[in-house]
Image 1 (cartoon, rainbow, N blue to C red):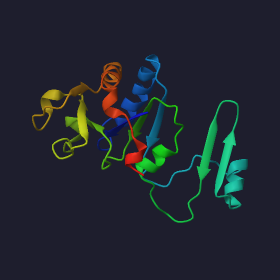
Image 2 (cartoon, helix red, strand yellow; image 1 turned 90 degrees about the vertical axis):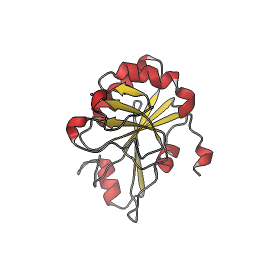
Image 3 (tube, rainbow, N blue to C red; image 1 turned 180 degrees about the vertical axis):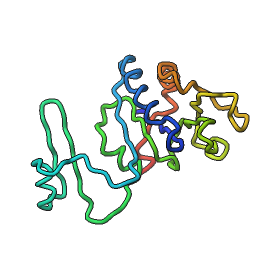
Image 4 (spheres, rainbow, N blue to C red; image 1 turned 45 degrees about the vertical axis):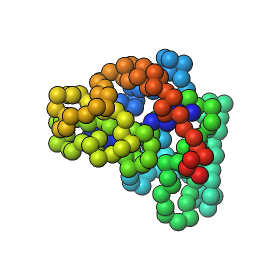
Length: 177
């Protein structure tokens, strides 16, 4: 499996890029999973549903499955963040690519998503794990770089770039356990 992170400040376009990149990679026959960091309390379950009722009754994990989908909901007894590597370990091993959105401070190879209009600083000058920059305005980059600069609005080109450099993103879980 290959793993690549997408790092950038809120509003930079990470989610839109990942959303467009998934079908672009699938057109190349790639199976894609996503790990998304959620900053706030979130829930994918709803009051009144069986799974919600099971959780409310105290279940540690609830798995809902059908012929088309599986969802696992795990309740942590104590608040704590899993590392991105722990989350990747939870994924099905037959996937070709894992796209990681968020986890900007992780030790994963990442593509920085940067827009000059955001007014936010760029991370690439200070983050050795950034291997490329996806931007809508390369001429506005705050510092010169030898890194590849990719068109933020061209997910097909980004998919081709990832596939062409896939060996670089090969994930070795043993390094993180």
